[in-house]
Image (cartoon, rainbow, N blue to C red; front, side, top):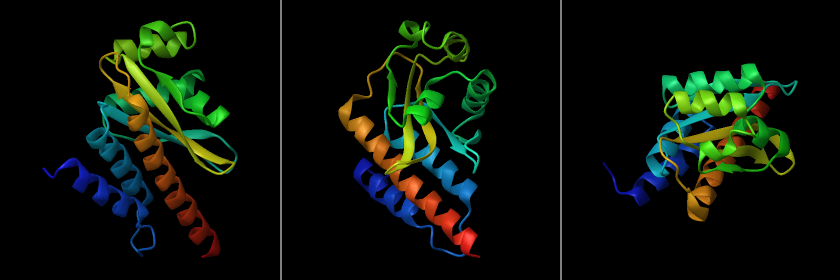
Length: 172
């Protein structure tokens, strides 16, 4: 495997490459979740995007367990990804045990799935929020400022790519 700096460079090039004719949005979002796991100190990642009416849907996850947990958040209208999307702010939860009062259903389900920490980052460009990226850990863990900044940078470049793709589709 390449060194982290090389992987980071390649990731930003891949996430910025939305001008090609064969651009596939789902492939693009899957790449984002996989690269978050590779580059950040997290075990899995999931992504919720809003449609034109503001309704969030699960669009990508680095594994099946995360996909199910993201769907659980949506079905129960509770969880860090929803809060991050609604408030357009990162949500940090380095230890889910301490968050059981904030998201009781989500916390129980996440812990039952083996997760102990979660970070949610808004997918936003200026004032427009189009979704949120969840980063999960299997142990209580502090992602740290550098990790949060890198995670937000990945979410931001992906947001620009998604908005660009939507604009091109509308023009076509």
